[in-house]
Amino acid sequence: MKLNEFNINKLANDVSLAADLALPKYDRSATKIGIVHLGLGAFHRSHQAYYTEQAMNQFGGDWGICGVSMRSTHLRDTMAPQDNLYTVAKLDNQDSFQVIGAIKEVLVAAEQLDQVLARLSDEATKLVSLTVTEKGYCLDAHGNLDLKNASIEQDLANTENPQSAIGIIALGLHLRFQAGIKPFNVIACDNLPANGQKLKNAVVQYCRFLSTELSEWVEQTVCFPNTMVDSITPKTEPETLDLVTEKTGLVDNAPVQREAFTQWVIEDCLTGEQPNWRDVGVIFSNDVAGYEHTKLRILNGLHSTLAYFGRVAGFTTVYQAVSDPTIKAFLLRLVDEEIIPSIEAPAGLDLHAYSRAIIQRFENSKIQHQLEQIACDGSIKIPVRSLEPVAENLAKGKPVKLLAMVVASWLRFIELKVLNSEELSDPLAEKLADVVSQFEQDAIKDVQKFVSLSGLFNSQLINSADFKQAFICAYQKLLDAQDYPQGALI
Ligand code: CS2
Image (cartoon, rainbow, N blue to C red):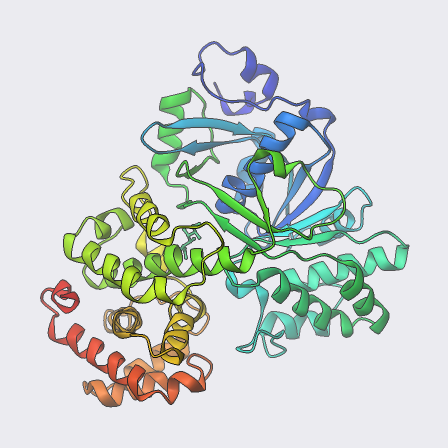
Protein backbone atom coordinates (compact mmCIF):
# COMPACT_ATOMS: atom_id res chain seq x y z
CA MET A 1 0.00 0.00 0.00
CA LYS A 2 1.36 3.42 -0.95
CA LEU A 3 2.18 6.13 1.50
CA ASN A 4 -0.47 8.64 0.44
CA GLU A 5 -3.12 5.95 0.87
CA PHE A 6 -2.14 5.40 4.49
CA ASN A 7 -5.48 5.91 6.16
CA ILE A 8 -7.41 3.59 8.37
CA ASN A 9 -10.39 2.83 6.16
CA LYS A 10 -8.17 1.85 3.31
CA LEU A 11 -5.85 -0.13 5.58
CA ALA A 12 -8.76 -2.09 7.02
CA ASN A 13 -9.96 -3.12 3.57
CA ASP A 14 -6.62 -3.84 1.97
CA VAL A 15 -6.23 -7.55 1.41
CA SER A 16 -2.56 -7.16 0.43
CA LEU A 17 -1.66 -6.26 4.03
CA ALA A 18 -0.61 -8.88 6.57
CA ALA A 19 -3.72 -10.37 8.16
CA ASP A 20 -2.35 -10.03 11.70
CA LEU A 21 -1.42 -6.34 11.37
CA ALA A 22 -3.19 -4.63 14.31
CA LEU A 23 -5.10 -1.45 13.43
CA PRO A 24 -6.80 1.24 15.55
CA LYS A 25 -10.17 -0.05 16.74
CA TYR A 26 -11.76 3.27 17.74
CA ASP A 27 -13.32 5.98 15.60
CA ARG A 28 -10.16 7.96 15.05
CA SER A 29 -11.71 10.80 13.08
CA ALA A 30 -14.13 11.54 15.95
CA THR A 31 -11.40 11.35 18.62
CA LYS A 32 -10.33 14.71 20.05
CA ILE A 33 -6.94 15.69 21.39
CA GLY A 34 -6.62 15.42 25.20
CA ILE A 35 -2.84 15.06 25.63
CA VAL A 36 0.06 17.25 24.55
CA HIS A 37 3.40 15.45 24.49
CA LEU A 38 6.63 17.46 24.48
CA GLY A 39 9.70 15.79 22.98
CA LEU A 40 8.16 13.64 20.27
CA GLY A 41 10.61 10.89 19.38
CA ALA A 42 10.84 7.13 18.94
CA PHE A 43 10.43 6.39 22.65
CA HIS A 44 7.18 8.30 23.12
CA ARG A 45 5.76 6.74 19.99
CA SER A 46 6.71 3.20 21.07
CA HIS A 47 5.70 3.57 24.72
CA GLN A 48 3.26 6.19 26.06
CA ALA A 49 1.45 6.60 22.71
CA TYR A 50 1.22 2.80 22.53
CA TYR A 51 -0.40 2.55 26.00
CA THR A 52 -2.80 5.36 25.09
CA GLU A 53 -3.63 3.52 21.87
CA GLN A 54 -4.36 0.33 23.86
CA ALA A 55 -6.61 2.31 26.22
CA MET A 56 -8.51 3.89 23.33
CA ASN A 57 -8.76 0.55 21.51
CA GLN A 58 -10.51 -0.95 24.53
CA PHE A 59 -12.27 1.93 26.22
CA GLY A 60 -12.37 4.85 23.73
CA GLY A 61 -12.12 8.41 25.05
CA ASP A 62 -10.81 11.69 23.69
CA TRP A 63 -7.17 10.96 24.25
CA GLY A 64 -5.70 11.88 20.91
CA ILE A 65 -2.15 13.19 21.26
CA CYS A 66 -0.63 16.38 19.93
CA GLY A 67 3.04 15.38 19.59
CA VAL A 68 5.43 18.30 19.85
CA SER A 69 8.93 18.01 18.54
CA MET A 70 11.10 20.66 20.19
CA ARG A 71 13.18 21.57 17.12
CA SER A 72 13.43 18.84 14.52
CA THR A 73 10.93 19.00 11.65
CA HIS A 74 11.66 15.43 10.51
CA LEU A 75 8.79 13.59 12.19
CA ARG A 76 6.23 16.26 11.40
CA ASP A 77 7.18 16.16 7.75
CA THR A 78 7.31 12.37 7.45
CA MET A 79 4.19 11.67 9.52
CA ALA A 80 1.91 14.32 7.96
CA PRO A 81 1.55 12.55 4.58
CA GLN A 82 0.59 9.39 6.54
CA ASP A 83 -2.11 11.21 8.50
CA ASN A 84 0.26 10.84 11.50
CA LEU A 85 -0.23 7.07 11.54
CA TYR A 86 2.81 4.86 12.01
CA THR A 87 3.70 1.26 12.78
CA VAL A 88 5.24 -0.10 15.97
CA ALA A 89 7.39 -3.12 15.11
CA LYS A 90 7.71 -5.32 18.21
CA LEU A 91 10.76 -7.45 17.54
CA ASP A 92 11.27 -10.56 19.62
CA ASN A 93 11.03 -14.34 19.31
CA GLN A 94 7.80 -13.68 17.52
CA ASP A 95 7.52 -10.30 15.77
CA SER A 96 4.27 -8.35 15.70
CA PHE A 97 3.23 -5.11 14.05
CA GLN A 98 0.65 -2.54 15.10
CA VAL A 99 -0.50 0.67 13.46
CA ILE A 100 -0.90 3.44 16.04
CA GLY A 101 -3.49 6.17 15.56
CA ALA A 102 -3.19 7.96 18.91
CA ILE A 103 -1.01 10.79 17.59
CA LYS A 104 -3.37 13.07 15.76
CA GLU A 105 -1.22 16.14 15.24
CA VAL A 106 2.50 16.88 15.13
CA LEU A 107 3.89 20.37 15.79
CA VAL A 108 7.41 21.77 15.98
CA ALA A 109 7.83 24.07 19.00
CA ALA A 110 10.61 26.14 17.44
CA GLU A 111 8.40 26.93 14.42
CA GLN A 112 4.81 26.67 15.66
CA LEU A 113 4.90 27.95 19.21
CA ASP A 114 1.53 29.70 18.90
CA GLN A 115 -0.16 26.44 17.93
CA VAL A 116 1.57 24.61 20.77
CA LEU A 117 0.40 27.25 23.24
CA ALA A 118 -3.12 27.11 21.82
CA ARG A 119 -3.16 23.35 22.51
CA LEU A 120 -1.73 23.82 26.00
CA SER A 121 -4.31 26.43 26.92
CA ASP A 122 -7.21 24.47 25.40
CA GLU A 123 -9.58 23.21 28.08
CA ALA A 124 -9.74 19.84 26.25
CA THR A 125 -6.04 19.26 27.05
CA LYS A 126 -6.03 17.38 30.35
CA LEU A 127 -2.50 16.02 30.38
CA VAL A 128 0.95 17.07 29.26
CA SER A 129 3.62 14.41 29.10
CA LEU A 130 7.26 14.72 28.21
CA THR A 131 10.33 12.84 27.04
CA VAL A 132 12.96 15.51 26.60
CA THR A 133 15.93 13.42 27.87
CA GLU A 134 17.61 14.03 31.21
CA LYS A 135 19.23 17.26 30.08
CA GLY A 136 15.88 18.76 29.02
CA TYR A 137 14.98 19.21 32.71
CA CYS A 138 17.63 21.97 32.93
CA LEU A 139 18.62 21.07 36.50
CA ASP A 140 21.79 21.92 38.38
CA ALA A 141 23.82 19.39 40.37
CA HIS A 142 21.46 19.85 43.37
CA GLY A 143 18.33 19.13 41.35
CA ASN A 144 17.20 22.78 41.22
CA LEU A 145 16.39 24.73 38.06
CA ASP A 146 19.73 25.70 36.55
CA LEU A 147 19.46 29.46 36.08
CA LYS A 148 22.76 29.41 34.20
CA ASN A 149 21.44 26.93 31.63
CA ALA A 150 21.50 28.72 28.24
CA SER A 151 17.88 27.80 27.33
CA ILE A 152 16.55 28.86 30.73
CA GLU A 153 18.46 32.16 30.58
CA GLN A 154 17.08 32.77 27.13
CA ASP A 155 13.50 31.86 28.13
CA LEU A 156 13.56 34.00 31.27
CA ALA A 157 14.72 36.96 29.16
CA ASN A 158 11.82 36.39 26.77
CA THR A 159 9.08 34.56 28.66
CA GLU A 160 6.50 34.96 25.85
CA ASN A 161 8.67 33.04 23.43
CA PRO A 162 10.11 30.06 25.34
CA GLN A 163 12.16 27.31 23.69
CA SER A 164 12.71 24.94 26.62
CA ALA A 165 10.13 22.39 27.79
CA ILE A 166 10.14 24.07 31.23
CA GLY A 167 9.44 27.52 29.74
CA ILE A 168 6.73 26.15 27.45
CA ILE A 169 4.93 24.24 30.24
CA ALA A 170 5.12 27.30 32.49
CA LEU A 171 3.69 29.61 29.84
CA GLY A 172 0.94 27.09 29.03
CA LEU A 173 -0.03 26.98 32.71
CA HIS A 174 0.17 30.78 32.91
CA LEU A 175 -2.27 31.16 30.01
CA ARG A 176 -4.72 28.78 31.71
CA PHE A 177 -4.34 30.57 35.03
CA GLN A 178 -5.10 33.92 33.41
CA ALA A 179 -8.10 32.47 31.56
CA GLY A 180 -9.48 30.75 34.68
CA ILE A 181 -9.10 27.25 33.17
CA LYS A 182 -8.22 24.25 35.35
CA PRO A 183 -4.56 23.27 34.98
CA PHE A 184 -3.40 20.18 33.11
CA ASN A 185 -1.40 17.55 34.97
CA VAL A 186 2.16 16.82 33.87
CA ILE A 187 3.73 13.38 33.41
CA ALA A 188 7.53 13.27 33.22
CA CYS A 189 8.70 10.18 31.32
CA ASP A 190 12.49 10.45 31.34
CA ASN A 191 15.06 8.24 33.03
CA LEU A 192 15.86 10.20 36.14
CA PRO A 193 14.96 9.46 39.73
CA ALA A 194 11.99 11.40 41.10
CA ASN A 195 11.42 12.79 37.59
CA GLY A 196 8.00 14.25 38.44
CA GLN A 197 9.18 15.86 41.65
CA LYS A 198 12.22 17.36 39.92
CA LEU A 199 10.13 18.65 37.06
CA LYS A 200 7.65 20.18 39.49
CA ASN A 201 10.44 21.98 41.34
CA ALA A 202 11.86 23.30 38.08
CA VAL A 203 8.48 24.49 36.75
CA VAL A 204 7.48 26.10 40.07
CA GLN A 205 10.86 27.84 40.32
CA TYR A 206 10.51 29.10 36.75
CA CYS A 207 6.91 30.26 37.39
CA ARG A 208 8.11 32.47 40.25
CA PHE A 209 9.67 34.66 37.58
CA LEU A 210 6.26 35.00 35.92
CA SER A 211 4.14 35.64 39.03
CA THR A 212 3.98 34.55 42.66
CA GLU A 213 0.29 33.69 42.35
CA LEU A 214 1.01 31.47 39.36
CA SER A 215 3.78 29.58 41.13
CA GLU A 216 1.56 29.01 44.17
CA TRP A 217 -1.30 27.81 41.96
CA VAL A 218 1.01 25.40 40.15
CA GLU A 219 2.53 24.17 43.40
CA GLN A 220 -0.86 23.51 44.95
CA THR A 221 -2.98 22.28 42.06
CA VAL A 222 -0.83 20.64 39.39
CA CYS A 223 -0.06 16.96 39.80
CA PHE A 224 3.41 15.83 38.63
CA PRO A 225 3.50 12.07 39.35
CA ASN A 226 6.86 10.32 39.37
CA THR A 227 7.09 7.59 36.78
CA MET A 228 9.29 4.73 35.63
CA VAL A 229 9.30 3.99 31.90
CA ASP A 230 10.83 0.97 30.22
CA SER A 231 10.99 -0.47 26.72
CA ILE A 232 14.16 -0.77 24.69
CA THR A 233 13.59 1.40 21.62
CA PRO A 234 16.59 1.89 19.34
CA LYS A 235 16.29 4.65 16.80
CA THR A 236 14.54 3.87 13.54
CA GLU A 237 16.98 2.64 10.89
CA PRO A 238 16.46 2.30 7.12
CA GLU A 239 16.22 -1.47 7.81
CA THR A 240 13.19 -0.81 10.06
CA LEU A 241 11.31 0.69 7.11
CA ASP A 242 12.23 -2.27 4.90
CA LEU A 243 11.22 -4.79 7.55
CA VAL A 244 7.81 -3.17 8.08
CA THR A 245 7.13 -3.20 4.36
CA GLU A 246 8.30 -6.77 3.99
CA LYS A 247 6.28 -8.09 6.94
CA THR A 248 3.10 -6.00 6.67
CA GLY A 249 2.86 -4.75 3.11
CA LEU A 250 2.78 -1.13 4.32
CA VAL A 251 5.09 1.57 3.02
CA ASP A 252 5.64 3.49 6.26
CA ASN A 253 8.25 6.25 6.40
CA ALA A 254 8.03 6.72 10.16
CA PRO A 255 7.82 3.35 11.92
CA VAL A 256 9.39 2.64 15.31
CA GLN A 257 11.09 -0.54 16.47
CA ARG A 258 11.18 -1.90 19.98
CA GLU A 259 11.37 -5.11 21.96
CA ALA A 260 8.08 -6.77 22.98
CA PHE A 261 8.66 -5.97 26.68
CA THR A 262 7.22 -2.73 27.95
CA GLN A 263 6.52 -1.35 31.42
CA TRP A 264 5.16 1.94 32.77
CA VAL A 265 4.82 2.66 36.48
CA ILE A 266 3.05 5.88 37.48
CA GLU A 267 2.88 7.24 41.00
CA ASP A 268 -0.60 6.60 42.30
CA CYS A 269 -1.44 10.24 42.86
CA LEU A 270 -2.57 11.21 39.39
CA THR A 271 -5.88 12.97 39.84
CA GLY A 272 -8.21 14.24 37.12
CA GLU A 273 -9.25 12.69 33.84
CA GLN A 274 -6.86 10.29 32.18
CA PRO A 275 -6.98 7.44 29.63
CA ASN A 276 -7.87 4.10 31.16
CA TRP A 277 -4.20 3.15 31.37
CA ARG A 278 -4.80 1.10 34.51
CA ASP A 279 -6.65 -1.57 32.56
CA VAL A 280 -4.09 -1.89 29.80
CA GLY A 281 -1.13 -2.82 31.96
CA VAL A 282 0.15 0.47 33.42
CA ILE A 283 1.10 -0.05 37.08
CA PHE A 284 -0.07 2.64 39.50
CA SER A 285 2.12 2.38 42.59
CA ASN A 286 3.05 4.18 45.78
CA ASP A 287 6.61 2.94 45.41
CA VAL A 288 7.71 4.43 42.11
CA ALA A 289 11.05 5.30 43.72
CA GLY A 290 11.68 1.58 44.28
CA TYR A 291 10.89 0.74 40.64
CA GLU A 292 12.91 3.71 39.37
CA HIS A 293 16.02 2.89 41.35
CA THR A 294 15.82 -0.73 40.40
CA LYS A 295 15.43 -0.04 36.70
CA LEU A 296 17.90 2.85 36.53
CA ARG A 297 20.62 0.96 38.35
CA ILE A 298 20.13 -2.44 36.76
CA LEU A 299 18.89 -1.83 33.21
CA ASN A 300 20.29 1.62 32.53
CA GLY A 301 23.40 1.03 34.64
CA LEU A 302 24.23 -2.14 32.69
CA HIS A 303 23.37 -0.37 29.44
CA SER A 304 25.90 2.37 30.17
CA THR A 305 28.46 -0.28 31.16
CA LEU A 306 27.96 -2.02 27.82
CA ALA A 307 28.02 1.31 25.98
CA TYR A 308 31.33 2.59 27.37
CA PHE A 309 33.19 -0.65 27.83
CA GLY A 310 31.71 -2.05 24.63
CA ARG A 311 32.90 0.92 22.58
CA VAL A 312 36.35 0.77 24.18
CA ALA A 313 36.48 -2.92 23.17
CA GLY A 314 35.41 -2.06 19.62
CA PHE A 315 31.79 -3.29 19.61
CA THR A 316 28.96 -1.42 17.91
CA THR A 317 25.71 -2.79 19.36
CA VAL A 318 24.40 -3.97 22.72
CA TYR A 319 23.81 -7.41 21.27
CA GLN A 320 27.43 -7.74 20.11
CA ALA A 321 28.85 -6.53 23.43
CA VAL A 322 26.68 -8.74 25.64
CA SER A 323 27.52 -11.74 23.45
CA ASP A 324 31.17 -11.47 24.52
CA PRO A 325 31.50 -14.05 27.35
CA THR A 326 33.99 -11.96 29.37
CA ILE A 327 31.77 -8.88 29.21
CA LYS A 328 28.67 -10.88 30.14
CA ALA A 329 30.48 -12.49 33.09
CA PHE A 330 31.47 -8.98 34.25
CA LEU A 331 27.86 -7.77 34.02
CA LEU A 332 26.70 -10.67 36.18
CA ARG A 333 29.31 -9.99 38.85
CA LEU A 334 28.63 -6.25 38.75
CA VAL A 335 24.91 -6.70 39.21
CA ASP A 336 25.19 -9.38 41.91
CA GLU A 337 28.05 -7.97 43.94
CA GLU A 338 27.59 -4.20 43.75
CA ILE A 339 24.32 -3.10 42.12
CA ILE A 340 21.71 -5.34 43.75
CA PRO A 341 23.16 -4.75 47.24
CA SER A 342 22.64 -1.00 46.70
CA ILE A 343 18.90 -1.35 45.94
CA GLU A 344 15.87 -1.46 48.18
CA ALA A 345 13.55 -3.51 46.00
CA PRO A 346 9.83 -2.79 45.67
CA ALA A 347 7.82 -5.37 47.61
CA GLY A 348 7.59 -8.68 45.79
CA LEU A 349 10.25 -7.92 43.16
CA ASP A 350 12.94 -10.58 42.90
CA LEU A 351 16.02 -8.58 41.91
CA HIS A 352 18.03 -11.60 40.85
CA ALA A 353 15.31 -12.75 38.43
CA TYR A 354 14.73 -9.14 37.28
CA SER A 355 18.41 -8.66 36.45
CA ARG A 356 18.59 -11.96 34.54
CA ALA A 357 15.50 -11.02 32.53
CA ILE A 358 17.15 -7.72 31.62
CA ILE A 359 20.34 -9.36 30.44
CA GLN A 360 18.18 -11.69 28.36
CA ARG A 361 16.48 -8.63 26.84
CA PHE A 362 19.93 -7.34 25.83
CA GLU A 363 20.49 -10.70 24.13
CA ASN A 364 17.61 -10.10 21.71
CA SER A 365 19.41 -10.39 18.37
CA LYS A 366 16.61 -8.61 16.51
CA ILE A 367 17.33 -5.38 18.38
CA GLN A 368 20.38 -3.66 16.96
CA HIS A 369 20.76 -1.01 19.66
CA GLN A 370 23.71 1.23 18.86
CA LEU A 371 26.11 1.64 21.81
CA GLU A 372 26.84 5.21 20.69
CA GLN A 373 23.16 6.08 21.19
CA ILE A 374 23.31 4.94 24.82
CA ALA A 375 26.78 6.46 25.37
CA CYS A 376 25.62 10.04 24.77
CA ASP A 377 25.17 12.46 27.69
CA GLY A 378 27.33 10.43 30.09
CA SER A 379 27.86 13.41 32.39
CA ILE A 380 24.12 13.30 33.18
CA LYS A 381 23.59 9.54 33.03
CA ILE A 382 26.63 8.24 34.95
CA PRO A 383 25.93 10.18 38.18
CA VAL A 384 22.44 8.68 38.38
CA ARG A 385 23.21 5.20 37.10
CA SER A 386 26.61 4.49 38.66
CA LEU A 387 27.79 7.21 41.04
CA GLU A 388 24.71 7.13 43.28
CA PRO A 389 25.15 3.40 43.96
CA VAL A 390 28.90 4.01 44.52
CA ALA A 391 28.09 6.67 47.14
CA GLU A 392 25.53 4.46 48.87
CA ASN A 393 27.80 1.42 48.88
CA LEU A 394 30.66 3.46 50.32
CA ALA A 395 28.41 4.80 53.07
CA LYS A 396 27.45 1.23 54.00
CA GLY A 397 30.98 -0.17 53.73
CA LYS A 398 30.07 -2.22 50.64
CA PRO A 399 32.41 -2.78 47.66
CA VAL A 400 32.68 -0.39 44.70
CA LYS A 401 35.51 -1.97 42.69
CA LEU A 402 33.32 -3.07 39.77
CA LEU A 403 31.28 0.13 39.67
CA ALA A 404 34.59 1.99 39.56
CA MET A 405 35.42 -0.03 36.42
CA VAL A 406 32.23 1.33 34.82
CA VAL A 407 33.28 4.90 35.63
CA ALA A 408 36.80 4.19 34.35
CA SER A 409 35.36 2.78 31.10
CA TRP A 410 33.44 6.02 30.66
CA LEU A 411 36.66 7.99 31.16
CA ARG A 412 38.53 5.78 28.71
CA PHE A 413 35.67 6.18 26.20
CA ILE A 414 35.98 9.99 26.46
CA GLU A 415 39.74 9.77 26.11
CA LEU A 416 39.50 7.64 22.96
CA LYS A 417 36.97 10.06 21.45
CA VAL A 418 39.38 12.92 22.02
CA LEU A 419 42.41 10.98 20.77
CA ASN A 420 40.54 9.98 17.61
CA SER A 421 39.11 13.51 17.13
CA GLU A 422 35.58 12.12 17.22
CA GLU A 423 32.60 14.14 18.38
CA LEU A 424 31.63 13.65 22.03
CA SER A 425 27.87 13.98 22.43
CA ASP A 426 27.49 15.41 25.93
CA PRO A 427 26.36 18.75 27.40
CA LEU A 428 29.77 18.93 29.14
CA ALA A 429 31.69 17.82 26.02
CA GLU A 430 34.05 20.79 26.00
CA LYS A 431 34.93 20.56 29.67
CA LEU A 432 35.44 16.78 29.46
CA ALA A 433 37.60 16.99 26.35
CA ASP A 434 39.59 19.79 27.89
CA VAL A 435 40.47 17.88 31.05
CA VAL A 436 41.30 14.71 29.15
CA SER A 437 43.61 16.56 26.78
CA GLN A 438 45.66 17.65 29.80
CA PHE A 439 46.28 14.04 30.86
CA GLU A 440 49.88 13.06 31.60
CA GLN A 441 49.61 9.26 31.18
CA ASP A 442 49.78 8.96 34.94
CA ALA A 443 46.66 7.22 36.29
CA ILE A 444 46.89 8.75 39.77
CA LYS A 445 47.24 12.34 38.55
CA ASP A 446 44.82 11.94 35.64
CA VAL A 447 42.02 10.39 37.70
CA GLN A 448 42.51 13.14 40.30
CA LYS A 449 42.10 15.79 37.59
CA PHE A 450 38.97 14.11 36.26
CA VAL A 451 37.37 13.65 39.68
CA SER A 452 38.01 17.32 40.48
CA LEU A 453 35.95 18.50 37.48
CA SER A 454 33.24 20.68 38.96
CA GLY A 455 29.66 19.47 38.91
CA LEU A 456 30.31 15.76 38.26
CA PHE A 457 31.47 14.04 41.43
CA ASN A 458 29.99 15.07 44.77
CA SER A 459 32.19 15.90 47.75
CA GLN A 460 31.66 12.46 49.31
CA LEU A 461 33.23 10.85 46.24
CA ILE A 462 35.92 13.49 45.77
CA ASN A 463 37.01 12.89 49.37
CA SER A 464 36.72 9.11 49.33
CA ALA A 465 40.16 7.49 49.24
CA ASP A 466 38.50 4.09 48.66
CA PHE A 467 36.63 5.28 45.59
CA LYS A 468 39.62 7.07 44.12
CA GLN A 469 41.85 4.08 44.66
CA ALA A 470 39.32 1.78 42.96
CA PHE A 471 38.93 4.27 40.09
CA ILE A 472 42.71 4.61 39.60
CA CYS A 473 43.18 0.85 39.70
CA ALA A 474 40.39 0.24 37.15
CA TYR A 475 41.66 2.97 34.85
CA GLN A 476 45.21 1.63 35.04
CA LYS A 477 43.92 -1.83 34.12
CA LEU A 478 42.20 -0.39 31.05
CA LEU A 479 45.40 1.39 30.02
CA ASP A 480 47.39 -1.82 30.47
CA ALA A 481 44.89 -3.90 28.50
CA GLN A 482 44.74 -1.76 25.38
CA ASP A 483 45.31 -4.66 23.00
CA TYR A 484 42.53 -6.71 24.57
CA PRO A 485 40.38 -4.45 26.82
CA GLN A 486 38.37 -7.44 28.12
CA GLY A 487 41.56 -8.38 30.00
CA ALA A 488 40.81 -5.50 32.38
CA LEU A 489 37.56 -7.18 33.46
CA ILE A 490 39.05 -10.45 34.61
C1 CS2 B 1 19.23 3.71 27.43
C2 CS2 B 1 17.72 3.85 27.61
O1 CS2 B 1 19.89 5.36 25.89
C3 CS2 B 1 19.91 5.02 27.07
O2 CS2 B 1 20.46 5.68 27.93
O3 CS2 B 1 19.78 3.16 28.58
O4 CS2 B 1 17.16 4.62 26.59
C4 CS2 B 1 17.02 2.49 27.71
O5 CS2 B 1 17.06 1.82 26.47
C5 CS2 B 1 15.59 2.64 28.16
O6 CS2 B 1 15.56 3.32 29.38
C6 CS2 B 1 14.92 1.28 28.27
O7 CS2 B 1 13.71 1.41 28.90
